[in-house]
Image 1 (cartoon, rainbow, N blue to C red):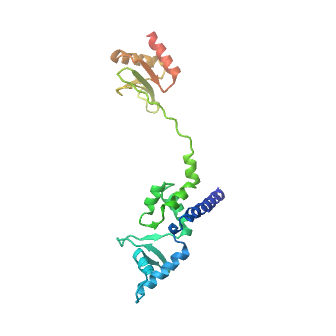
Image 2: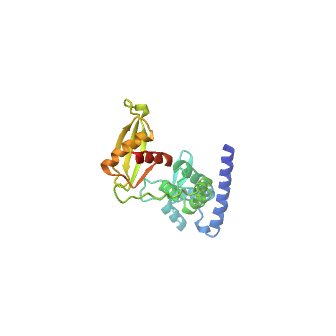
Image 3: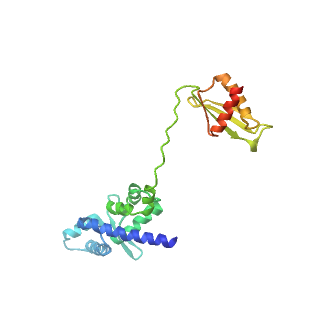
Length: 243
C-alpha cells in the first residue's frame, strides 16, 4: 500500500512539473524563482545592504520587495510587508510540489484552492497557477469528484391536518415498564403533532386498537404510512376495518 502511494505521489509530482513547464513556457516572466535564482538574490540583497556607493536599479528593487532571514546557518528569501511582523517565505520552484502537497493533504485535508491559499496566506509566496495545476492532478480529489451523485428524494408534502398519518414503533424492551415493552408513535405529517401510546407487544391487533382510539379522538387520516413496511400497515388496516 505504501509503495502504491509513493508511486502515485511520484507520478503526480512528475506530471505537475511537466504541466507547470508547459504553462510557464508561454509566460516565462511569471515563472517562480528557482533555487539558484533565490541564492543569487540573497547574495545581492546582503551585499546591497552594506554597499556604501550608489545602488543600482536592480538593487533598489530587490531591497524594496525582498529581505533575507537567517535561521541558524541558513538564509531564506522573504517577501517584504508593510507589517514587519509578517514573514512570508519565497518558495523555490523545485519545492512547489512538496509545499503544496503538505498543505493540501496535512493542513487542509484535501482542501480546495481557496482553503490552500488561505493556509498559505502571509506564510509562503506561492502563485495560484501551481496550486490549480496540483489540484487537477490529485488522484484522491478526482476520485471524489467522479463519485456518482446521490439521488434527490422528492419530499412528501401534506397541506392539511389528517391528510397523512405516520406510525412507528419505538423499542423499549431494554427499559420496559411492567408489561409495556413498546411505544406507538403516531404523528400527523402536516402539523407534526405527536401522540404516544404504550404497547405490550407489536401485534397488529393491539396497534390497531390504539390507533382506533386516536382516530375516534382526532379523525382518521387519508393516508397511513409506516417505515415498518407495507405488509405491516396492511395488517393494521385490516384489523382496523374489522373493528
